[in-house]
Length: 127
Ligand code: FAD
Image (cartoon, rainbow, N blue to C red; front, side, top):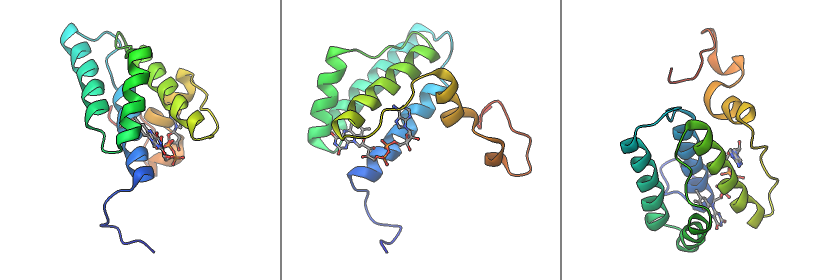
């Protein structure tokens, strides 16, 4: 068994990164300020330059150029990221995710009641 304190491999880094991106999108404002939109665009652009798996980064840069980040609302950003993730999954011959807000919010924001133990299920884990 691999010890817990080993550096991340490509798959672990991918899962951690997608988790961060989808969770950020789930909590992105419905009506972001111009400054917030710029933060979102810059974050994604910087990530595509800094991502340590080089060929993953190059493909992500190309995909972003073809379809730039949609940052006008929580729904736009969540759906855009879902499509981007599906592009990578297709390349890896994995099944596509169903990109609807209902499914995305269930996976990345609210979750089933079993995620909350004895607590009341909230609107979102960070609400
Ligand atoms: P992941 O694909 O990491 O997904 C994690 C969880 O997200 C899933 O369990 C599911 O619940 C949920 N999910 C799945 N699809 C979606 C979706 N469309 N929208 C919302 N939620 C979803 N790996 C490579 O080998 N080659 C590459 O070129 C490559 N490029 C990458 C580019 C980027 C920008 C990132 C962040 C990662 C990249 N990866 C790449 C890693 C790859 O995408 C996976 O993260 C990795 O293979 C682990 O896959 P997984 O099956 O465990 O789940």
